[in-house]
Length: 279
Image (cartoon, rainbow, N blue to C red; front, side, top):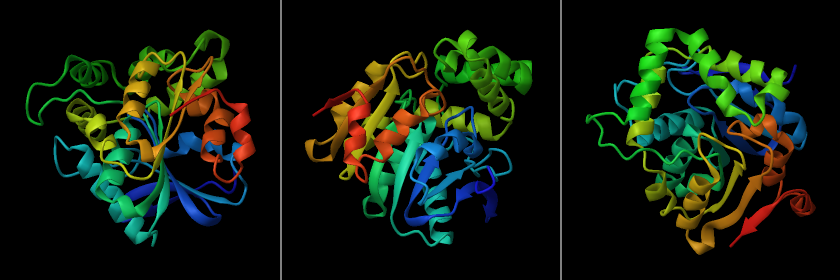
């Protein structure tokens, strides 16, 4: 995709499609990278400016200084990127771990986020930083160190899709992205996930916030999305969208459904294409 260019600012790499108006910022999950959002672009308005970072410690982006960062540390890094790009206000879409980052940023910088979309949101494990890691977070780190990135990705990628055996091209795409993860960035992200508390940040949000999740998500199942949505203030609730026949990698398996949520305000008629639960 020729208009999806990889750039860098102050140690953070990001992908950008030039466009007009307010930028849409995309925050990837723990086993991915910014370029993985490319299949979403054709489903969005062609005029929209889209930016997707490689989170700190991912694919050429400098890692954070803290060995055990919190979502607030990633939010601070994001604020620095937006400052350097001269972006005062944006829309944010965070997928999985990126939802923790996006909610943390929006809770701390409410005037800078006009709208937030939480896709397959990870709730976090609520472990105090520096304490014993949750079993799930420790297993991620141990498996990557023991197996190496390629085998780690081959073992985990299929769980991110609905009916992976019927979607070999998507599976290959998910696996290729996950095979690029490395230390220390992945370890930092796993520890942030362990310490995360999405609901606490969501309760503070004031901007419109939509939630979308695959009905067959095995990683962050629909009940987690409903919990996050329920925590929103009534004035901040947008739509809760449960996408049938989609797994955790919902923006890859159902890019049109995700784009429909993004485009709701600019194209209200697009809402007719999705199954929603509204407040």
